[in-house]
Image 1 (spheres, rainbow, N blue to C red):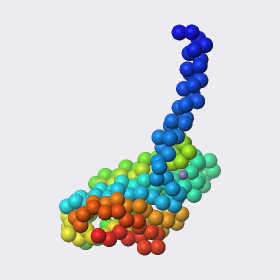
Image 2: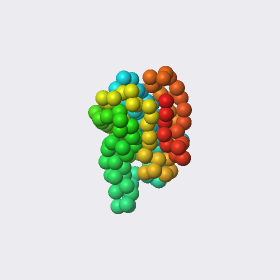
Image 3: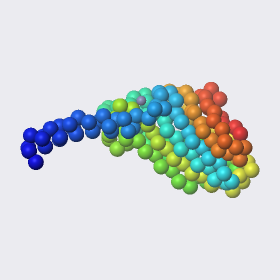
Image 4: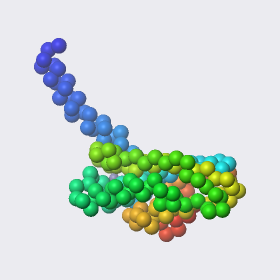
Length: 172
Ligand SMILES: [Zn+2]
């Protein structure tokens, strides 16, 4: 191949790649202060997938530079995997956290224009009849988060709603 053409291709790729990578992570729904939750409650199983802007959790959305920012991000990464940090199920339902996965490009030291926390949690509950609501203590932990847009499938059917910080409970 003509070296000039090869250089041109490499330059073009170098210019295009960051744009493409940014677009890929720049979800249409990314709006600071607003998280999203997909919730499925079926029998004794609860599956919750959150997507929350990192800005709403940390107050910044760049890679941490100061010791305080690094600590805040490490605390967040550890905290969100703990039961009762993000969501709290009724004690009477006797639920157990089965799996949890927290991902963000910021945890990997990468950055695009916006960053989200992608959090997946699965619970198994031995008293499913008591599963009638979920509380979200995360609003108290992270006051920049104002609302959660929820798409849900529960024994009552399919629905969509918004849970707000001033009444952080989802009931069905
Ligand atoms: Zn953002």
